[in-house]
Amino acid sequence: MLSINPTYGISQEFRFRLGDLTFPGIISGLQEVPKSSLLRLNGGKERSFYVEPVPDLGTDWLNGYKASPGELRCRHFGEFCVEIASDDPELLVGNNRVDLEVVDGLTTSAISIDFTWDPTPLEPELDLGDLTKFATVQQVGQVVNGAFDLDRAANLIRSRAPVAPDALLVIGSPGKSQEATYRVRFLEPHHSKWLGLSDFHVGMVEGVPPRGIKVGWSSAGMAVAMPSGGARSFIAWGDHSGAPEEWAIATNPPAEVAIERGVAYRVRHQMQLETGINRVRFRLWPEGLPEPKSWLCDEHDGLLPAASPRHQAASFSLFQHMGMPVEWSDIKLRPMSSDEFDQVDPASGRQPFFKRDRPGAF
Image (cartoon, rainbow, N blue to C red; front, side, top):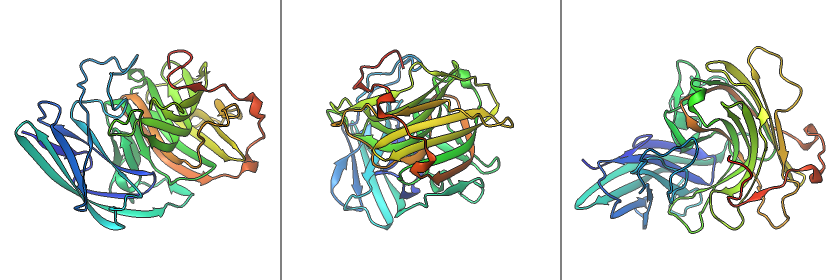
């Protein structure tokens, strides 16, 4: 039986965290690529939304990706993601409704999602040490890729397994220089490619050519650990978009770090986005041990060509690429000033790479 199944049901809520409101889900009972997949926002104009047309037939996600117009956004045939721009003229403050309709052969399925929209930015300082005051994960953040669950009994956020290829939960509103600290635990690290950890996410940009879903990942500072014993920081614009302007900067080779199954770690993740430079750095250490004085990874965009697009603001997010569940808790976010960062010589930066011309397999 054909049915449209939004990941977070038919009653949802959004705060201003990103340029797009996202409604992920999956269409069950789909026999072929739909003849049409249409939405109407508040009874407005009819428009298409993306449904994944390529099955996951044994894709080796640890070493590559499937060839899909949606790149890393959806894994399974029939997965969908509705994207509504936060400045859409048909989007209302308060109560809204989006109607979805899918046609498969001679069968039509339709569903309506009621949702609330509050465009007020969140405070730049957030303390999410107590998650029991929230009823749903959508009150904590906005899911862009994959799925996350709020475990109120354990006072933590957990990615929903299996994670592939990407999972992203945007927690903060867009801002300049920031610091995030949190506790993280990896339940099955050796089933993963990258374990996360977090991202100062700028947003998704259109692919070239457009795909019906935004595929280009833009980050003002990602922190990544790997079960193989490495760690990287990334700064990127339009990664996977195929746009001529696409670029990325990454720690290469990776920094050395040891990750153990079930052990709790602490993370300090900082992003500088002022004084003409975008910088990211982070530390990760076992909970209960002293915090290291040195940064595990520290990257900046000082060598990015002047004509390349640059980031103006970013939102703190939880991130994971591949694998089994990861748990985050005791999340705290605060704004930073430039004088909290030591000065860096722009010429000391790492050379960016452009489009998919990457050094090494990462």
